[in-house]
Image 1 (cartoon, one colour):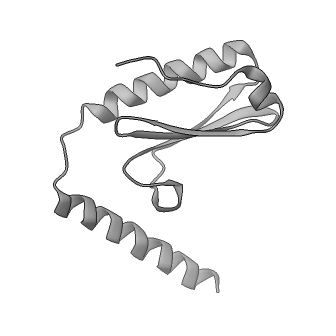
Image 2 (tube, rainbow, N blue to C red):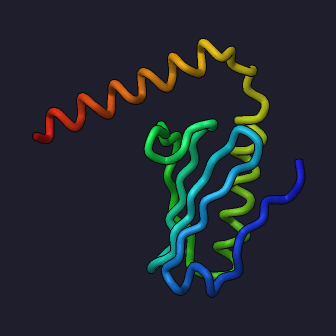
Length: 108
């Protein structure tokens, strides 16, 4: 698999967010006091995502290297998963939508 592109350190130092994908892997990294990252399996965007793991990295060049290595590990794992049928993909989406609707009802 090719190397993941991540923005330079100043992108995260300025509190910016980076969202991208690598095959089935979807990920989001946000700057702040640290780089907070989360990963999920596509094809869903963040609103329909079932986050598989969240992790924080130091807001340094080394932290970006650690983030890249972590994302590459996740990309390898997710992209090795068996392909879903369209029916399975839609079932997973519908379950996620139903779960989000139930959570919204519980908060009202």
